[in-house]
Amino acid sequence: MAPEYPPVVVILDSRLEQDQLIGKLHYVENPDGNLLRVRWSVSGPTADFDAVGDGVAYVYRKTANNIIEIAASPDALATPLGNGRFQWTEGLQHEALMFILILPPGQTVTQPHPRPMGTKLFHNRIAVYWIANRVEGNFRAGFEWTLQPMEAGPEAALVALNRDYLTLYQQETAVPHTRAHLRQLLTERLDETDIRTLCFDVNLDFENLSGQNKSEKVIALLRHFEQRQQLDFLLRAVKSMRPDLPF
Picture 1 (spheres, one colour):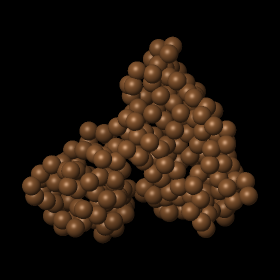
Picture 2: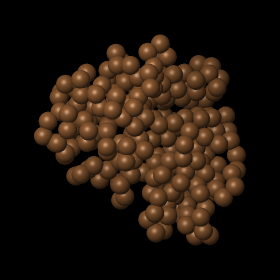
Picture 3: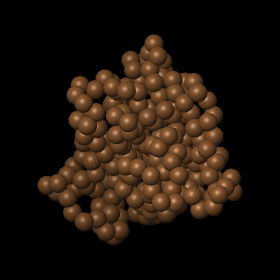
Picture 4: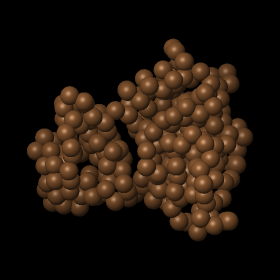
């Protein structure tokens, strides 16, 4: 998986205590407000990259002081929503943030919202991450998930999690998606109600998208995620909403 480029990384290393989800909370940022280059899909130390969150991810060390990691709290609490479901919210001081959740031992997640961008095993536990983008008028990011005990080992639980929530394409209908093909597909196969629903799912305001008609709104939507290198995230949201489309 290619590196992510958020301005801030939030890491919650969680544990369960009497039905409460408690964790060590870390913030990683650049003191100058520049973007961080974060590597997720690596198994160990990488040259010029420093471990953050005890090694759950690695951030490019350009200079001696371009990374600040702040241990904000040893006992941060996720908001309980009942029946094993939890929520985490963060203020968005910048345009985006990367939220990493390290699950308690023996636990996986179901019904994450929004869908995570990546998963992996970390010290025999599952770790997931999301990317949240700020939209006009909304300066908070929210994430929800339901904890569920693993029915098998961590490797099997990770495969099931990926299959249920990270799959981008149906192998039997997979086709290469050029920029023009995506624009044509979304314009022809989605109506305005679908576009509004999609915007809601990806935390965008339909009315704030530039354009006077559906075709122009689709172009603005694609451009928004292209500029953030997050077309995969958009395609996952489309696939979740419309499983019949060839993604």
